[in-house]
Image (cartoon, rainbow, N blue to C red):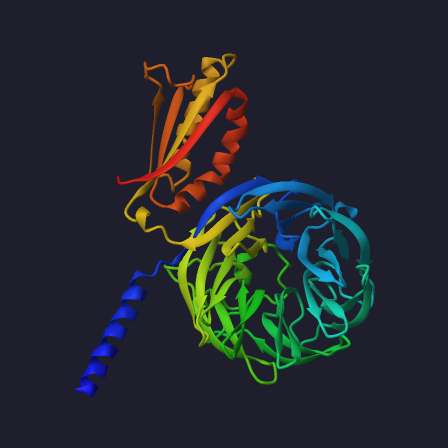
Amino acid sequence: MIRNFYLLLTTLLLASSISWAQTERLPQLYRTDFKDITANNTVTVTSYKKQGIQYVYAGGFGNIDVYTISKEGKLTAVSNHELYKQKGPARGMVADNIGGTDFLFVANKHGNAIETFKILENGALTRVSITEDTPQTHLGTAITLEVVHMKKSTYLFVGGLEETPGLSCFRILGNGTLTHVQSIKDTNKIYTDGIIGMFTHRINGKTFLYTSGFQDNGVSSFKIAENGHFKNINNISDNDTDRYLTGAYPVNGVQLGSNYYVIVGHRHHKYYKRGGFIKKTDFVYHGDAVSVFKVDKNGALVPHSTLKDNKNTLLQGQTRIEIIEVKNKEAIIAIGTRDDASIQLCKLTEDGQLQPLNYLETGFSIYYGLNALTINNQHFLVAGSNRFDLKKVVAYKVAPENKEREGKVLRHIVNLKFKESSSQKEIDEALAVFENLKNKIPSIAKMEWGLNDSTEGHSKGFHYCFTLTFNASDGREIYLFHKDHLALIPKIAPLLDDILVMDYWTTE
């Protein structure tokens, strides 16, 4: 009797867990805002919380733009700051508190220098030091930065891509200046040629640094001593079986339970067309995937699992990996892609398996410019557009799927009011260009438009109405940031007195 009771209870609990899994709403991305930048494009995005306010820093060619981001995901411009020699782009950026002062450290890629900015009370920046490349360091074409806090001192690790690549460590002083500690040159044994990603794990009181070697097609592990000196532990190269490291690019990591993982993405060399840029041209393309490595007791990386790209994922040209949330021994991560122009959401389980969840086609490629942040327990991603014709930074909320939208289409309504000074010829030409977008942007499922025929007197002077239909949120994103849509705006804007845009979901 008791045995039957326990069997019944087990069955009920199992059925309950299955039902919960089947009804669990997966995370989805919802755009909350976008803003113009003053730089030529957005290369890197980072964030920092100061006095309860969340600031976003978007770095590109020549400039860094500063914004606040609200709990609703709305961006507000604060300031912009010129980079050293008006160079850049601001390829690597990291903000941290050093001895009670908030700093932003910036890798000025083509300025061959590391810039230190003090973060002011309103989030704006003031430069306090510049550390230029020397024959002893590896700051030429500086790309990646990692702040490492030890017991008595804090250090800045720098990686880059140059003729004499390597890895460097600097001690960060209380005023933000840097003093050189150690540099090692790249060799054929370690993978520090083109360090585009770095991550630090602290395990049992020991600190380990992991780097990606873009040109080396591999990853390396280092142990960091209290004085900032570091030594190589192990190195893993690409192969055509259980890892994908050709063009090793973003690196991140997470602890799940008692397991430590390092997650590595890659932008395969096949995606680069520039002659002479890729040093090792005998690579073999065997697909795209994200590689997961487990950290052993000595801090070394061990190949563990891969998530291969397929028809249900968008993983071509991975350039940034961000940890969104760690909960119940699972991590939700975001993978920004340059070639698929998307953000792929995945789950990493405690046993180190990556599972795809959802993705959003952003409508623009992401080139290292992706940052995860949390405000009042709400998760956000801020992405930068790697396009000189777009010049935008975009905020997304990460929230459960809206089941009410299933089986529905998205209507995008655009109402236009032309100036009295606009000639009919100019209006007709503008309308023709607008209508032709349906032939240039495949994500527009349907378009219809017409001249206002209402006689109720409540049209507020609007003359024409366009109705665009998209089958998914991705369609709207692709349309919004499509080059042909962007090219239309400066042509039609001078003719308009006003514009009204509304979107809604409905059944077809």
